[in-house]
Length: 386
Image (tube, rainbow, N blue to C red):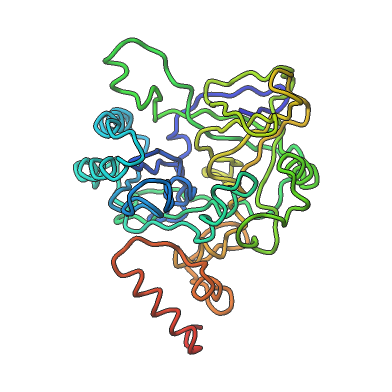
């Protein structure tokens, strides 16, 4: 992971970050953060694993049905439970078996939800503009935001704020929260208490060094050969804002060394892209955190060829979660205040017009959603939506 000069990652208990939890699906386990006691923000990639044409059945294409999801707290038994679920679902490893994998997950989830560790999901949503760009390398982090609501409240919950302002260079206190390094062991009893070799009660915290907006945009445009930060595939971004934050890459490292928490995938044109696990970029805020980004960061190693050392232009870019505050407020039946906190004040007027009439509405998998969306659109057309 990226680190600030002189700073080293540390392994900490996830319970030290009480506003952070897990969103578990048949295909991944991702980090989420509490906006309210019943509302969790996560990334769209977690909730939207397949699109039409991927080869998966219609039942798992698009936003996953809430019954295929559950939210988990980092209690002592979470790793063992997720390991057992994994063993039961991993036999369905092909994309044309995705529906069978989801059905198996659904059957197991029913045995675990509504206890002190796991919570059933009521609704699942991703920004409707996310699928327009999810397979375009330059714009796949655009609109990468998702929300789930829970069927029951999490007691004594701590909620997060969202980072609304841009980042300054070397922003003080900026850190990345990611999965702790997998444990290598030949002891079956130990492995049964881990999820894919990871203890889900622990996380890795890495101090990182942010880039200012000018440096971030310049490196991003160079890496993806963009003319400007508006020339993306898909729908335009809110207020034409840049969709990413950036940080420096592996300070004082001259060779491209693979971190045990990342996997390297060769990209086109001689560049090497490193996809890190689900990560929260955050700043401590009292007993909680301020979320800067939530999702899948991408590290870009700029090379002249695949055998050369990394150049100093390498950088990491993160989705900019806080630019989608209107959508987050709308889908959670509230709004985001100027300090980044969720407040119980539903959006009204022109702010929501794009969501109810312009195709930007949440994709909700509930039986009544299509009828509700149609009714809202009809009312909007008649001028009856405030």
